[in-house]
Every structure is written in C-alpha cells, then in structure tokens.
Length: 287
Ligand SMILES: [Fe+2]
Image (cartoon, rainbow, N blue to C red; front, top):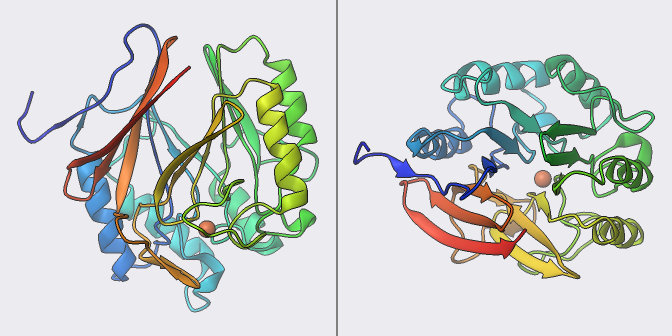
C-alpha cells in the first residue's frame, strides 16, 4: 500500500464500507470554508480502498444565507469544482437536505433541479427531498429535516419513515440519515434550531427503535459525536469544513474530518480522519 494512503476499516464478512461527512457550507470560490473542505477531500482521496458509497449529510453549500451568490452557481461550484475528484458513477453520493441547502421552497426547487437522480419515492410533497435506497441487505432511508411544508428546518415526519421501514423489514441493516440531530450534541439543545422539534423528535426516535434501526446519521453541529439511546445510535459528523454555526463556534476538541465505516453482520465500526489525514477517533457497535 502507498505509505501516503489511509487504510479503510473493512467489513470482515460480506458487508459495506462507506464514508459519511457533511457541513462544509461551501460552493463559493475563495471562501475560507472552501479551503477547509478541500483539505478534508484531499484526506478522503487517500483512503484505500475508496468507499462503496458516500453519505453527505447536508449543508453542502452556504445557500440562501449568502444572498449575493445564487444557489445554482453555488451548487455548480460544489459539484463541478470541489467534488470534481470523485467518480460518482463508481462511488455514488447520497445527499441530505438541510437548512443551508433547502432553506425555503425556492431552494427546494433548485435542489430538485440540480439533483435530478434522487429517487422519487419520498412522502407526498417531499418527493426528491426525502427518499430511500436499497443496497442488497442494507436499507438507507434519508429523511428531510428542513421541509418548507412542515415549518422548515428542525422538523421531520415519521409516517413515511414507518411505512418504508415496515416494507423493508427483511433488510439485515437499516440506517437512517438526516441533517438535524434528534438528540442534542455538545449542549446545543435549542429546538428546532439545533435539534428536531421535541414533539417530532420523540415519535421519530421511537420509529427507529421500533424497527430495529442500527443508526441515525446526522450533522448540523460542528462536531463528531456518538450517543446511544434505547439501542439506536445517533452519529453526528459535521466536520467537512464549516468553522462555526450561527450562535456557536466549533467546540474545544472538535476538528474538521470525514468519517469512514465498515458494516458487517457482527458490527458497525467507525473511524474519523482529520484534515491532515490522521485517524482521530474510533467507535464500534454491534450490528
Ligand atoms: Fe445545518
């Protein structure tokens, strides 16, 4: 192996090897977050072997918060320049909506336009925003925590999720991804600003528990954090490049990173890799 390369955790038996990261608020040439994101991507390109797929957990672009930069231009820069290194035919990316990506109905329209290949199997009104994908024995359900029809950022619906998880009860592994944490991370407990609204978070979490979901992957908080509640783990990775969130800076001890996972019939194993390519944290959980 090239001494420059970073060894991926690998499943011991048939399984899945994937990368998840999110929250770079980029898409604007020359902006500080763009160089952070470039460093994280440079580290990711050293991963060997490259992942089966990537989960990008939202806040790809600065979005409507940068009024002087049009959304389509931000997306174009994100895909055509910042992610030009990736062969997306070989390594698909599954994207989540978010407060920066889809802040309002107009931004949702742009999202649908720039991401036309997202499966059209979401809940009514959220087609192309929320979706599920089956990869052999793995179900990935991507929820939309920023739907304009539900009140915007920090809201989620669980009826569709319940029906998808019911229909795929045969899947050995079930994972769910969305942008907002359901459970507070690093003390960011204000709802719906930092976590899903309380009245929706509870039924959402109980849906995950009821259906034996392994993990809920999220972002939004500039941190890496794992916590288990009732047998389901919430895994937050918000280190792709953003330096801070409104009202809160990256906490002490946090760092820009991507995370990599190996999933097999025995366990889920994770490692985080920082912008310099150093392995920083590891975690495992029975699958
Ligand atoms: Fe966010």
